[in-house]
Length: 265
View 1 (cartoon, helix red, strand yellow):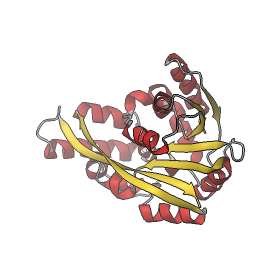
View 2: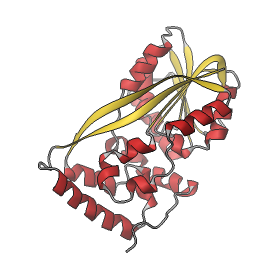
View 3: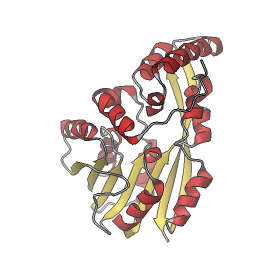
View 4: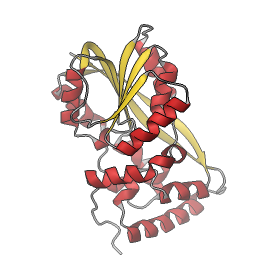
């Protein structure tokens, strides 16, 4: 079998993928919060602010925003209606009511002009048309508003446990960007990168847990594989892990993401 075939994740297929995993997405993914604490410190606002979380998914980062920004009103927006359903339930169960949640397209934001103090998006921009997204953000932000993009660069993805050991993972995930590409989008949108910071995270897992995550498509990248290619790749992945790690109950690696703080000119 030729594992290097090109497969494309279309928007309808991506939406179907997220509908299927919405009910157990939080269990499958790791939610880091240090970048949200950094955003809180960077904004340094105690007054009430309007924040939008674009591509909010099931609310795992939305909850961290509400915990950190006590005086905010949060607009949660995601293309997938099933994710929005679970987000509402999740935030209400955690006793938060200072939010609204709606299905919406990141390329045509359902936000009023000059209404947002801050727009955030976490591990989601690879699903957006960035030119349209930046145009929408520019219109929605107040003049002194900020956009925060938290994402993984292509080179960072190559160095993850999946990029290094799961066949074709980094090759097929061609929706991610490099920093110079993001800088060009920002400049074309007549915006400016105020700051950027790399966040590193030490990870520990078991082989069983990693296999469980892959089988349940915890990254949408796995929806790029057809069934035969995925099964063959998963078998090779397990062999690679067994070869490169002595303790299959204590598999360790280092993940990286980047946070961009962006403002209008």
